[in-house]
Length: 258
Length: 302
Image 1: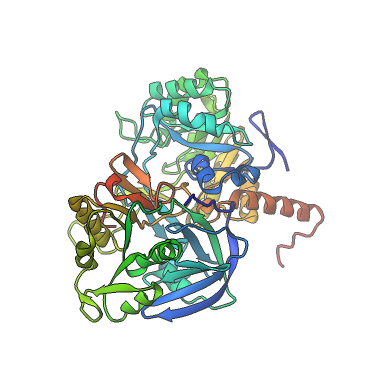
Image 2: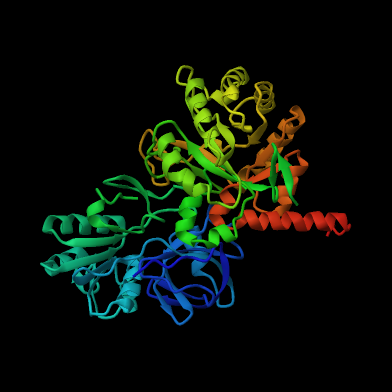
């Protein structure tokens, strides 16, 4: 999977649908001029109208999201309202426009073994995109907080679910499901909240299993300009936007908490 | 709308602020399309220091009303890394290259200026003087006498145009601009970011924890535009050398305001984070305004 390049600059794209899936929204965007992205890549999103004047007069900067899948010329994004930027994106209606820059960043590399996909919360998005592109069926393990969020599992095929409160699937952490899947010839593809990714990294390191982690970081630009999204790697700071967002787990020290 | 600046002939008056656009990384993201539609009429490098710097610990960004605070900490490969790795790549850009350098002492700055100024690929050198003096703790650029001493020491080390990037975190920016001019600077650029801080949103302990890894950072974006305009006007009135004005410019009209305040060039920074092509867009809007002005179609009360 070679890395597709983004067209230079931002482009205005029309929202075609915004559907609720449990606590999440799935935003569909017409990107007929955009290239086909590779799983793990992301886009910078901002509403064309009314971007700002929310809580604390924000948002100001665009927000980074992995795409959930590409269907025809439509990009799908999985959102949860957790702040002024996501709040505005979650309320976008069909016909409204979005500024879009992307696809950006380094995608997942091809599996070097039997793929096990492990995700949590909105971090399941790049795994859905990856599942669509894999030749062989992969084991998919997803973690959610509670019954309100667990319906997000429907966005990925044949997923086994864990919930923190036991309201759906396994009562506990998704990494407890992951532990049982690890073995020779397995490669883990993971994305989710930092504590989950750190647990995945530590578990895979301990068991000698390869893993590719898609990290999240607050970023201003998404294309290497601001140097704001760095993560500590064994070779020093790396920019999540251009050196990642997908990192070989072995290249990271520890996944930071923010 | 070509413009003359320190002996350079630039295609339009819009350049980038140092540290707000990494042309090498942008080429990784956008490929050759970047060069085909390069948004600036000259490219200003991020700050280069004598030795490599890793930059500040994260978090490095905080979004504010109409802007952001950054505490990036000038990560760079150091002078040798810049000359060996970056310069050949930057030389391929379709516009003149301005290299920005920072040092803690006049000696460090002199060494940097001489080394980058000697390279054919470099059209001009910009001094970042927002660096604390190791001895006094004060920013070199914040004290006119200190600034004049440092720029005077550096000036003879290159025949290339020398631009002094002024800090806004000073009592009298016009006095600093006059000091730079007296020391032989060919131009001044302003404003750099305003020193700023944000508390951790979840901070409840005592003492409260700042959000940024380096505690404080620099504020940029539309939030500082009005401050920038006042400082650009004050400096332009105080010196005869050209001024590069910047601070929160996001549209052609705002760029024109900065030029009307006395700037020869306008630099775009934070807006490029929101819109990678912002520089080119703003240059286009500026040209349209110029045309409208000439044909009497610029209606302020529309």
